[in-house]
Image 1 (tube, one colour):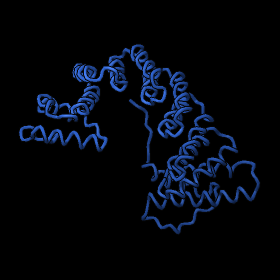
Image 2 (cartoon, one colour):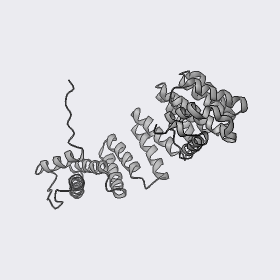
Image 3 (tube, one colour):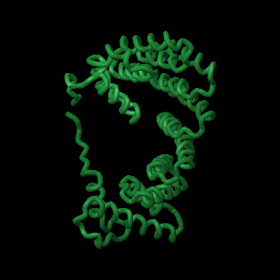
Length: 303
């Protein structure tokens, strides 16, 4: 922390906490140090902002494994808002930090029973299942959540990751397709969907992956991963039993992709270099381009 605590007043700390809340910054270590040194003794001067600060400190305490401080904040909040479902969610977070997962799940289920439209406790249940290694239960809970909150893009991303962890590539691809409906101009979503299709294998999936890689490169010409994926897809199609005109088309596209990789990773090399066909005619050129693109990665055996 770069703050001079001796020169800071409680109003300075209050304003700093307010700024972090507005900017959605956690700054957990800084929050705890400033709370202990300055603001904890002045919390009665905060007025209506006191409850927001207590919530902020409670979350920071959990991040820093200061369970007692978090419990103190929750006791104050429960005393003033005994029926608040929001405070009950914080109570479940403390139980989760203590690894009392069953108790935390019971609290979250009570919150959901009282308010089925409350998204936060459903997300916390998914987090608990992941912490316990119960991926199947996490997927089931998150699918149920997505039925009610279909516009939650973070939820689709998380569900995609869970399906990938289980090897359910077709379902993971469906999640990314849903994300494309929300954000069709994101080159990263196109790239990830292409990665999944490429991993699924088969000529049809490879051709679909090629299309998504092309779109990713179109949206961001500096996306090296998409360029490399495009090159690999074209190589698969060129060596397949596709029609002759299609193989010639992907050969040209692969030449362009490897040329872009070479140009972006080695600007000093003249882009007018001829690449030739996707045969063994110039493997050295292609390998140099790929090595430069990935930093000449060398895998050695560990001692």
